[in-house]
Length: 204
Image 1 (cartoon, rainbow, N blue to C red):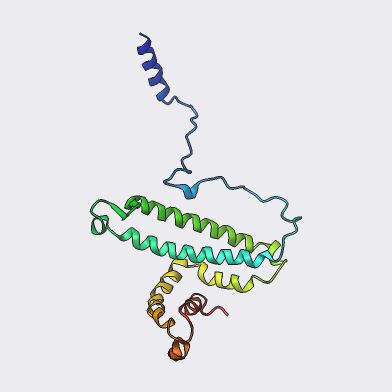
Image 2 (spheres, rainbow, N blue to C red; image 1 turned 90 degrees about the vertical axis):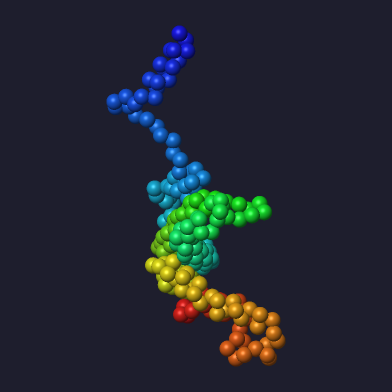
């Protein structure tokens, strides 16, 4: 009889009653959706009275630029990886080896999280650096912000353009090892310098 009562109580608890309010566990912090975890504040406090360090504006802008560049490349990688069929690249649905093995379906979810996290951080940093309390403090970040504006509308397209031009630079890495006097006129700069020029071309 006691077992029957327990069974009845368990079944009753599982049935949703009319008007019942249930508290559903938030799984936003699970491994499948970690980029959506946490709760953001609805407003800032004491911003207008705070004494911001103007020297930090350029560093914040650099962080924004680097994060935006990372977002573009992550989006490009995710787009390509999502189109790959597991059966064409793996016999067991996994990739990797020697300690680093992951399921392809898990890697797709990780890319989704990476893109979402970088996108959220980019938007946050952009809103911060464009806020009045920084624009009134310093003009040091203007050049970096100009570079950000050129990429922000289409970071994936920007990354794809960069990736298309990278082979021409990487193919000349061996030439960097030669003495400067033996290099051709078009390759006086090292690969690192040419790569930097590629990333920041048109942003004077």
